[in-house]
Image (tube, rainbow, N blue to C red; front, side, top):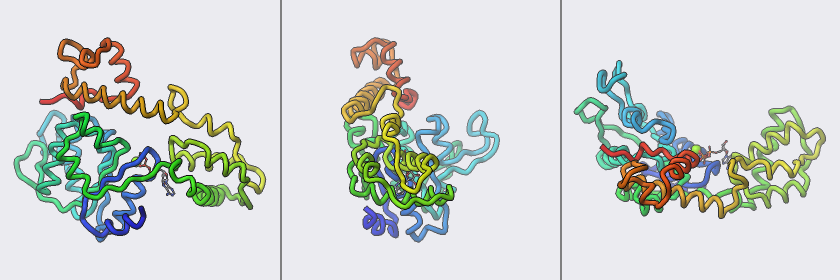
Length: 305
Ligand SMILES: Nc1ncnc2c1ncn2[C@@H]1O[C@H](COP(=O)(O)OP(=O)(O)OP(=O)(O)O)[C@@H](O)[C@H]1O
Ligand SMILES: [Mg+2]
């Protein structure tokens, strides 16, 4: 994977970084920028999931004064800010169809307009994107545009989950123990083999981020020269309120989310009524509302026009 990073970094190609949460997608994006000839210029990260759908166009492309209520000043968008550098579009799988269309145009023509302006602006921007969703199945489900997918899928890099790279765990553990021990002013001579075995057996739903957190906590609590953890932590670590996240449950949740999103896309975000998603899915409206809330689906992104 690092060899791929080294190869693609100096080019201007779009890179699609995929992988579960906490696998290091942002770290890789930053590494690509750092090793490119754009490294002295800006690296601009946009979290597509954290910006409300109504604001994201102006966030990405900027707006003119008076373009909409509340647009009191002209504002430069993230694409303009990244000119000469790199833009990192994180959580790209969460973009509404409308913004997907606008993005497709920038990728094709390297040109866009600020909201409220008809003056096209040209930018020289390297695009990196990341997602923890399976974009291909989002395309199949109709929630992600196929043409955009192919534009983004120029150079895919997939980050394996931690449970798929068990052999790397000892190295990562050593690195994190050193790092946090230094911060805490402690010294560890060795790590118990029981602790390493526990780490290698655990499922790590939060991947490297979770490993890092467990080690930070253990370093604080460990008072002798041998690093060890309390095995009860690992079972308590996985946060989802719906109980332990085993692969089957995670897969089912992901599938349910896809089906609900596909139905919402077909119904332009409508939940109830004859043309609503609830009817399409064959479940009561209240049930669907509850699932939308608990799966944290943003139904507004499926509104068109
Ligand atoms: N190979 C690695 N070596 C050391 N630290 C790592 C490695 N990979 C990831 N990390 C650390 O793990 C944490 C999570 O990484 P990062 O934020 O890049 O993950 P992500 O895939 O973007 O996660 P999310 O999908 O939740 O946004 C960061 O603190 C990062 O520094
Ligand atoms: Mg991230």
